[in-house]
Length: 354
Image (cartoon, rainbow, N blue to C red; front, side, top):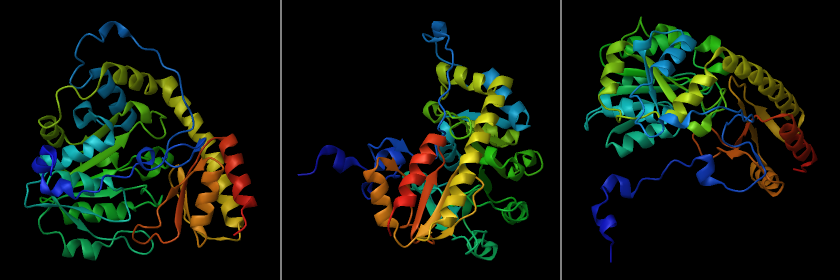
């Protein structure tokens, strides 16, 4: 006999496969290189005297700090509970039930899941073999699309979409759809950002997060950058208190001059280890491709991916298997850790007998 919850659950939710986050799909291990997290944990100070009060809807100091960091105006920023909430807000704000979002796999899985939970269709236009956008195919499927999600640097491949292609998509969907550029990893390749375009393109939204380079995945703080009209529309949909006092306080400290300097120093350490890993991977005989990456992770291909994956798990080292995704046969992804974690990882990988 079905439970009441089973009877009442919406049909599209009954068959929904939830996003397999690193924490949800894997547990244990002693070295976590599977979630694109920073290896650094930093100290912050909290003022508990305000915790009995509801927080500001959009904490002014936080919005000002991030606007300054991103190079936009304060009325072009909205803060949310991670970039994941920004994805949902864009869909809920701009999509009707008979409309669609467009995504370009392989890419971040939450775009499609967020659309499904809102009863919104998803049009999938796979990337080209070189992980560039297939602009012709996008144009052929543009009818009924209200939000286009493009992740650059792309998760999980680490590849970058050129500014020329992004401009082409913005022009293609002018007057029809919001083009949402997911820049979760942009601090690792700041030259690829399009945040400075938000005043120029009325259909551009840029999603950001403090989870990656700022080493604050645990506080769930993200931002959307867009023109004032998009921000105002999203502000009607977001819950009344999206950013808690502790989150706002920590985020403001991270966005201070000292906090940004620390982030950039730690980013440099991560890039050093990334270079070590990339070089080592190219020298391992059982790996036949290492994908270029503009992020804090590296994807590679090996025909022995299951044996290697299992061997790493046995040694307490967790990485991510993406071989089931379109275009990613035999693909594994490593999040870059600190020097000690890199040492342990490479020791196991160099000793692995394919």
